[in-house]
Amino acid sequence: MIDKEKAEKAITMLLEAIGEDVTREGLVETPMRVAKMYEEITKGYDEDAKTHLTKIFNVKSSDIVLEKDIEFYSLCEHHLLPFFGKVHIAYLPNEKVVGLSKLARTVETFARRLQLQEQMTNQIADSIEEFLSPSGIMVVIEAEHTCMTMRGIKKVGSKTVTYSMRGKFVEDVALQNNILNLIKS
Image 1: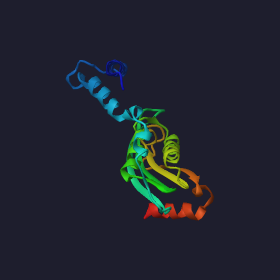
Image 2: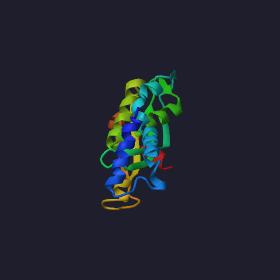
Image 3: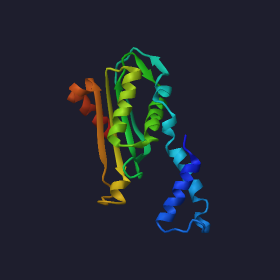
Image 4: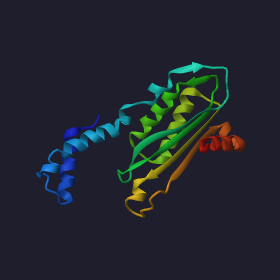
């Protein structure tokens, strides 16, 4: 849970540091609004993937489960600027599946924290592995980082793609390619 009073003071100091008049009409409530925004966009610290991934169902199938195009928004821990994109999760059930919305909720749990894309990719895969024990997992994240597009090198439209694979996906290149083709379709 965010300390709103401390956050409001910090935002007030930041506004003053960049030369703004914090008493002008448009900025008077800005520290309060920004503190409230940070509470919302960092709510993942108050959540645990276990909450979402322990509601499982027994199945006989071991066929691929793929949930693709899960949109997310997160904050780069290096610059506190947004990065956003899509997460694709594939797994091979080991007689257990989880509700599809639970995969999206797991993504939100990790996206709503200060993050590195590479770290988030592994956190999602690790959580699914821990609670579902599937035969294989593949998590792919495609994201645009505003720390690359609006500052620094300013390469608008560039995307970063990260992969995390476990189990059968590590050894089976044909399986990997199958998932990548399904993601593209």
